Amino acid sequence: KPMENRITDIGPREYKEFLPPIIEKNFGKWVYHEIVEPGMLMHKAESGDEVYTVRCGGARLMSVTHIREICDIADKFCDGHLRFTTRNNIEFMVDSLEKAQELKKYLNDQKFSGGSHKYPVGGTGAGVTNIVHTQGWVHCHTPATDASGTVKATMDTVFDEFQNMRLPAPVRISMACCLNMCGAVHCSDIAILGIHRKPPMVDHKVLDNICEVPLAVAACPTGAIRPTKVEIDGKSYKTVAVKEERCMFCGNCYTMCPAMPLSDKEGDGVALMVGGKISNRITKPAFSKVVVPFIPNEPPRWPTMTKVIKQILDAYAEDARKYERLGDWANRIGWERFFEKCGLEFTEHLIDDFRDPAYYTWRQTTQFKF
Ligand code: SF4
Ligand code: SF4
Image (cartoon, rainbow, N blue to C red; front, top):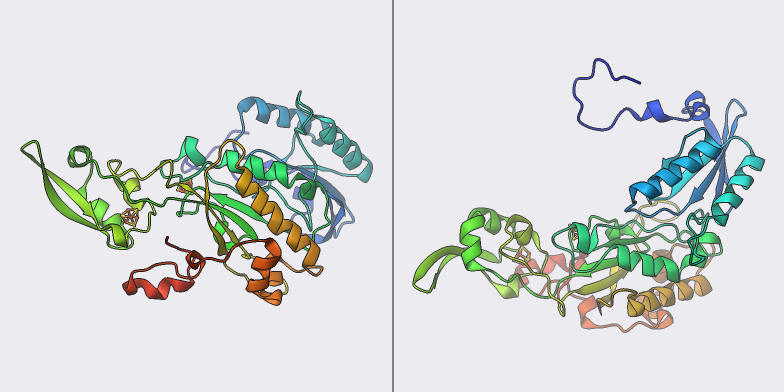
């Protein structure tokens, strides 16, 4: 449809242009919805119309070929309509239970040559749904770990929980590859967070040529950077000095100044956080807490990290009450028992987040320091 009278061509087109006719007809007039079976939802409208949604897992980073395949499925079953959820699941909508079941079978039958699911149906209700994640080593400049790799390894480990709804309550897993947390790690049931453990390495010659010193200084949230001059081979360079004991390895300076990289093979890895949620159902929304301060990067399958995540999930599944989110369970039994039941070590890194006395009030934040 041509877009006449547009003020600007920046930004996406109006979403209402893309609604399936049945959604457009009943827009804002839904009475209730229910989960018919894992991966399948039914929405009932005031008019009596019913919409059946089949949800399947999708990759966050998709190739054009893959998107074309998804569009072909939408053409075949849903008159060309589909939607993506905030957790990168793909939802196909049809108007009867029979069509939904046919579609579910079709999606579950699509396999890669190795036998694994291409479009696994699931991700609803009291289970693990798709992981929200960030960019990782390929696409961003400050990652301390990979996103696609850690997410794939984790989802493979907890895949049964994507297709069943046998956990006490929903478990939202998120992943962010640095402290900037583009993912929702600060408020997830289980969060994987990439962390650096070494300060930036300043390349003075490069810095003088390509960076604005005031910008680098202003970028640091802890005031660890100051302007300075250094002499190298008899030549003076305008550069910066980093007070290492104040640095919390956030990478903000590197965002402003590419002459201050901080990625490091030994220093980088992941921390695990648990107990956050954004829902206000039963209890208030909560921030996640760090429960494992450091696990080294172990590409391509991150075995230690996935083992610990499975331990936490299994202990929660066994011990929590129905409808109790992971953090609510830990709060009820006490965090000491949470560590015992999950087989996690409690260390001093989990108590204080920042050593500098000027910042002691940050104790309760999700920032932390080794
Ligand atoms: Fe980049 Fe950090 Fe966001 Fe990952 S979390 S995409 S490293 S800014
Ligand atoms: Fe400051 Fe963060 Fe750079 Fe450290 S990594 S110097 S805390 S901006």
